[in-house]
Image 1 (cartoon, rainbow, N blue to C red):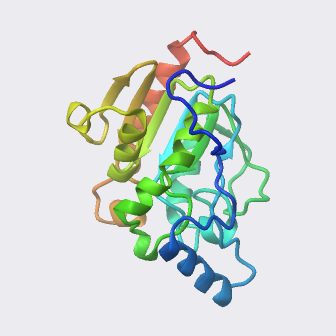
Image 2: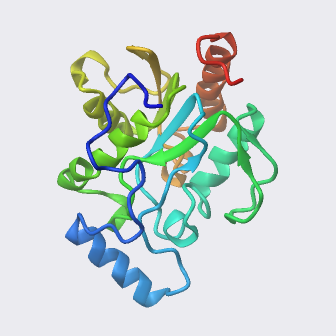
Image 3: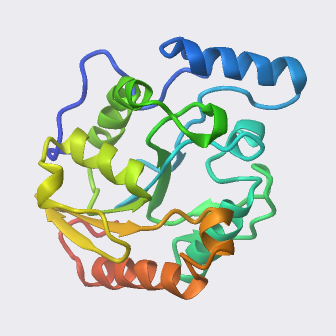
Length: 228
């Protein structure tokens, strides 16, 4: 069953193929990584979580030594340490996170995806690459029938979400802690949980927890699509 919030792109699956050929620069960067580290995943990283999730977390793109290495979003780098510990704290994950896709960690009523599915040089996808990957993001949203909340980790994720939903960015400005009602879904904004943001104090653990505390409260009060 598709989400009525957005229509799926014809013939586009919700997950990019591991060897997605769409962006020449990203393909070349993936291939260089594969040559240097053949045991790494080195492909378009699939979303993590179940289609029945009411919460979708949207990151920027796989990290070179994180998801590009392990094949699971936010797994293997500092951003994942903070994100998964937060999800465990607020009941959106169960088990133990060990920065290993085989750690047995399970998400609860939650899915994690990225605005761009392949690792970009310098962690900075080009505007055209963001646009090119939008078909997969659109299809991902369309295949979440119970979706009620999204957390955008950073401005790129925020803008990709707004563009995919077809709404004007000026009506929903990005700001840490902001909450935007867009149709049947609430979009929560957060600064990205990167080492850069936390080391500089732009984002603290308390600030990050505040966002997910708001999400938890919203979903606990929501009964329209509560998992059965």
